[in-house]
Amino acid sequence: DERLALDRLSVYTIRLLAADMVEKASSGHLGAPFGCAPLANALWGRIMKFSPRKRWINRDRFVLSAGHASALLYGMLHLTGHGLGGPYDVSMDELKLFRQAGSSTPG
Image 1: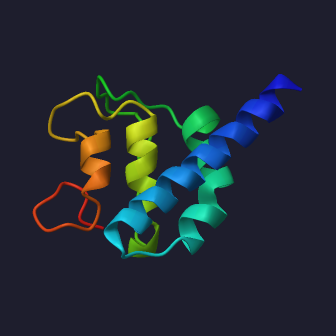
Image 2: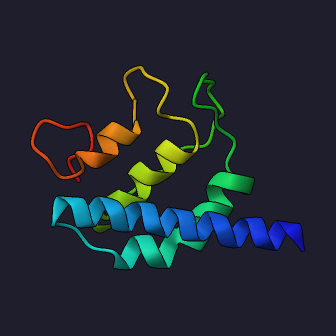
């Protein structure tokens, strides 16, 4: 089924993006991003109602309290279009600065 293949590819993409961030930073944990990638794919891809381009009062919000999963959050913000500039910019360049002082992706 095409949908399952796309889900599988999406989960692998989320995991590899998190792995690249942690590897480049030489710091971080992969347990939460790897384990939660299927959940994040389902939430951000099918369940949550949000837009990186506009805000409205009833939009869904994703609250993350576990710092060990910050690579997952930054990766999802990037993959869902939050790398377009503005105060919540999560570009590929910012992902490369994961866990670096002064970056917008401090971990």
